[in-house]
Structure formats: structure tokens, C-alpha cells
Length: 473
Ligand code: GLC
Image (cartoon, rainbow, N blue to C red; front, side, top):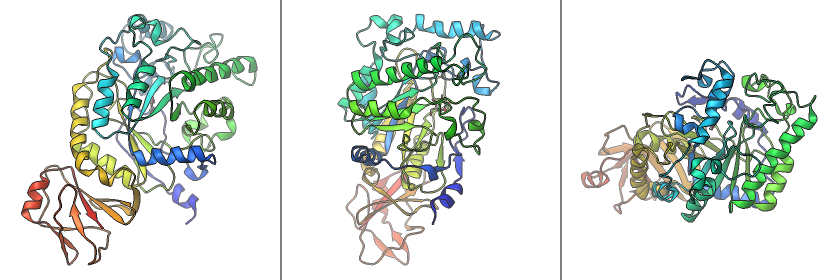
């Protein structure tokens, strides 16, 4: 089948998250360009084997407990809504928002605790917001004063939090990634104060003011190269803010891209080349800008409804919000495990987000979920890591993967559903020579007339799980 027809038919299932500022669902993946550099290819394979990562959105916005950055954006969208005493006046609001830095002090910051909880849950890689659209650098950049080391936390020996976080996770064996927003709503060369910003975009026409834009390009490249130089080994450069892109890359079929007013070519070729000099094999993820610098695609808050034959990752929130908001509602462990299986069986990775609070801790619910996921992974992760998808991928209550000749068939149970006595595997033929067992137990299960026979004892030992893994070899 032609790639186009697969991809154009692609339809994503929404996860019901209202405040998405960009629609990453509509992207036409036929433009995917596999990397030619063997080091990048190797890293991409390693990353695809990892399957499960942690994302963290953390910044001064966490102190107000609001949506990350977006309330600064003068667009009439729900997620940009300003609240509180300064809401009536954008200039006043921006000043107050940026003023949060004067009191930001996450004294309970303990990245080792995060890394160990994430590791126990079976996560293998990390993507951390080093700088979001608001421009606040969560690292000690020498190119801005709007940064973590200029807050009251600056006196703390762990104040360069990006460095601390990356190194704590690396010590636990994680691949590390830096989320970096290309747009920067703090720096004068993006939102040049001569023209007030009208929306998320650059506030002037870069074609008319090429020196200004050059200044911004240098600034952006400088900051990215700082991250690639002073923060140990980095595996992924995850670039957000897809409206910063060359005009020529705009897909007119995608509504949010159609409204980009200016060419915002940031020179990805240079950024990637310089970055890879320092970080050989670096994965570059210039989100939604299909082509050479988007080594994998990143549907947001959703899962494709088909298997995708290109490298991809769904980023998703564990609660409803990317950033910490008080009393966020966390998804159940049951749902999170099903989502992981949904994704892995279709050939993708899950990047699951937790938003640390202003004091530098995660909500208890995040630890609880990770703990429960870890208990399940201890038994069942053999069917996840380093596996490949297997047709029919996902059918009925089943999700499939394989490693060599071994088939992994996950039965996605209802909440509270124990294993029945007889179970039919949808969409898979098993021959009489094959041996079937359930993960964590040695008993070979009988297979008759299309049904797996499950003795009471096996069912009891399996207990209640969100999904049960059958190994067929
Ligand atoms: C959405 C949000 C953005 C967030 C991103 C993470 O685009 O608007 O703030 O960083 O998702 O994927």
C-alpha cells in the first residue's frame, strides 16, 4: 500500500483534553524522512526499544498553578485566558507573571527521588522543559537574566535544575531529552517591544527586519548549544513551538499552520549540525515540521488509531494539565497501562507527563500511579521493551507485540475483570506446536478449539491486573 493512503486515512482518537494549543493530530506523516546518519539511526532504534518515558513541565507558572506559559499569549483562546488581579491589563499581567521569578523557590527539589520513582515504574527516558514559551530558562543560561539561577533558589547548590535533573536520571540509566521552546515570549528579539505582540508569533516581520530576526536566531542557537555543551550527554532535542518554521514548510491543510503570518526560519540545519558535533547521534525532534529534523513524530494527548510504520511518540498528561495545577485529576493506573499497550502495539512510545509543584515535589498521586505501574511492569514488561508491533496490532480487547518468534498477546481487561476459564484470542491463529503461558507463571496452558484454557489456580495466581500477558512461543 502506498504510504500516502495509509497516512491520509490516519485519524487520531482524542483523549478528551480541551486546552490543547496546537493540533498535532492532523500532520501528514508521508513527509517523514528517516535519518541517514548511522549514529542517529542507532539512537533512534534504542529509543524505540525504550517505549516508555517521563516528561516534566516545570517552570515559574507552576507557582501560580496555571497552564504553562499560555496566559501570556494575547490570543482569544480558552487556554490563553488570564485570571487574577492583573488579568484586565495584558502589560500589567505580563509584568506580574514574569515577577513570579522573584519569589520562585522550590526548596524541596529532589531529582533523585523523581528518577528512582520513574525507574521503578519502568520508564527509560526523560524529556524535561528546559525552557517553555514564556522564555524562562530552567538552566543557567548566560544569554538571559530570566532564569532559574536568578530566583531566590539561585542560592541553592542545586539551582541549575536542568543539570541536576538530567544527571539524576542519567544515573538511573535513562536516556535524556531537553524540551526547548523555539518561540520565546520574554526576549526582545522575538516579541520586539516596538510592536506589541498580537498572538503567539514573532511580533515583527522577519523579512522586513532581518537583523532583529538574525539576533533571535543567534540567541536561540546559543541557548540550545549551551544545553548541548554543559549538561552532559543528551539524547533528544525536543523542540516545541511549531509555528517557528520556514514558510515553505507550512501545510495549508492544517488550520493552525495556515494562520502563521510570517516566515520564521530558525535555521534548523545549523542548529542540528552544531548540536550533533557535541552530541553525536542526537535525536532532533522539530515537532510538526516534517522532514530532516523531525526524527520522530509526536501526536499530543492522543493515540493514532492505526499502527504507524514510522517512529512516533504520544506525549500525554498523567492528570489533565501539563503543568502543575492544584487538585488535578489523575488518570487511573488501569487507564495508563491500557494507554501504554495501545501505543506500544501500534509501534509507538508513551511519554507520560507529570507537572512538579512550586516547592519542587510531585503530587502524591503521581507517585502512587508510578508505583502501581511498576508492580504491573515487573511481571509484564517482557512484552514491552525491545518488542516490535505485530499484526493485527490491536484487536478487540487484545494488543500484540513480538520479539523474534515469541508473540506477546496482552488481554486488556475491564476494571476488576479476572481471567475467565476460557479465553479466545481475537485476530491470532495459534498452531498446535506452540506453547502458551501467562507472564510470571510457568504453567503451560492448553489451547483447544480456539480457546486458551485457564485453570482456576493460574487465574488466582494472576490476580487482578489491568491487562494480562500471554506468551506464545
Ligand atoms: C501543548 C501545550 C504546550 C505543551 C505541549 C506539550 O502544545 O500547548 O504548552 O508544552 O502541548 O506537548
